[in-house]
Amino acid sequence: MDFDPYSVDLDVLIPRYLVHAYLYYRQGTTLISDQCFDSIARRLHQEWDNVTHPHKELIEHDALLSGANYIQFPRRIEQAAHYLLDNKPEPQPKQMSFNINKLHKAIDKWSMDQGELDLRIYVPDNSKKKRNHLGMSEIAEPCTRAAWYKFRKIFNKPIEPRMMRLFQRGHREEFIFMHMLREVGLTIWDEDPKTGKQFKVVDFDEHFQGSMDGITKDKKELYIKGKKPFLTEYKTSNDARFKELKKSGLKKWSPKYWGQIQSYMGYEPRLIGCLFCVVNKNTDELYLEWVEPDKSAFKLCQSNAEEILSAERPPRRISNRPAFWLCKMCDFKNHCFKKDVESAKSCRSCRNAYPAENGEWGCDLGKEYGELCDKWEDCNVK
Image 1 (cartoon, one colour):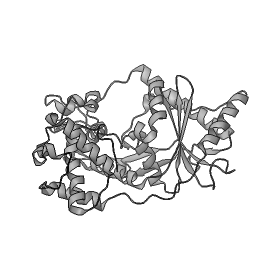
Image 2 (cartoon, rainbow, N blue to C red):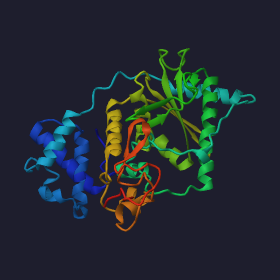
Image 3 (tube, rainbow, N blue to C red):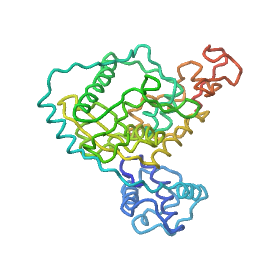
Image 4 (cartoon, one colour):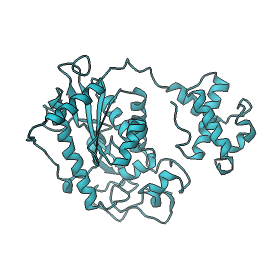
């Protein structure tokens, strides 16, 4: 459960410090490494004057670098600590060994010998595409409130033509990846034989959904032992982001994609892992990574989905400071922090609307959902 203490808002570190100090000094256990805990204390000590969290008064500045046995822990911190202890990550299954280097070499050889390509490329009609569910590609976003805002459609950001072309570029690359992987010996299904459509997983009365790029088997056992199915996901990246990916790996590079993949594998436990494929749009360089299922990550995604789907008002912010770097870049920053900013009016953004069965929506007032009435109330209660 280690994390980078310098990647989160400063005030978030106060409750985390208290929770893990309680576990260590009062329960005699720990869920993070000593190095991670020391890094939390070190950053708090360095930036103490900028801390505004109300629990700051429980901690002595000079004692941050020497220990926390003296602290009188409030009841809320004790409860949070016991919750984490009761829900600590389960032991992970034995990892499968996928030979990424061998796959890279096979793709490079095929690239040099490649003949004429005749591909069937299907590009969906984005002009008619509307997502009414909570997507598994969104559930691992750092801020739960932002994901809730998007689910409730409180702001309809205009999409530039450039972005539409970018979306279509991503769809085209999927077919290049599939052809390439098939040519080097893998068997890939991009459609469910039972439905003729993409493989899909759903939960929470169909309000939580995700569509997988492909299900794959290595029937010849060229790169992995056994013939069990695994997930394949394809992404594109610009050069700057691609370099970050090569340096840090998927989990740190994109918690969003990490959560998406873990959700897919969690709902389809027959999948033994995921072959994550990224192409650099500037140079055509490829990045391939084998991702193991992580049960604790899947449970966290499920928990986030449940919180978003059941919330009648905006969930907690990731930070209470508009200047926090994630908040500054968020599409919903004005709706989150400014009291006079109203949500886009629709039944979805009304506080009387609620997710019903079979992916449908209902209205607490008994009105016909989908027909905006004069009883609309902003769900973004501030």
